Length: 175
Image (tube, rainbow, N blue to C red; front, side, top):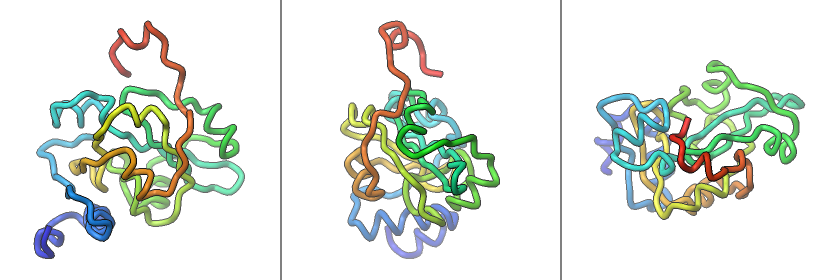
């Protein structure tokens, strides 16, 4: 991506693109025609399985008001009790909190390039895939990368933070 293409992107996507560029990442953010605010919308737009969407979910840690970012597959649900056992008691984060802490709007939260550092955990289920797509700073922007790239860019540990999947869950569509 050359400098002029970078400046045509929204500022939040430019932040993500710079991190990718500085790391020598092979792929750049793509702008989609339609918003991809949910994992299912993004998967549909890209023609991939919903599990290949790495969703970024923000919680608010109660002890210090820190943003807690959980990155997991689009076909998994975060188990808040597992998260709390690792990082301390958390609660829901509203749109204003997410925007203030990350610099991104809900639906476009990238796993990296946050306005302020977040406490981050990467769910181990993401590593089922060789390649995943993440939000790239805007509800219309995504970028392709390996789960190992997310780990490298965030420096976050890999943990078990999702609800246990049963045989019934595997046969049922994702929520």
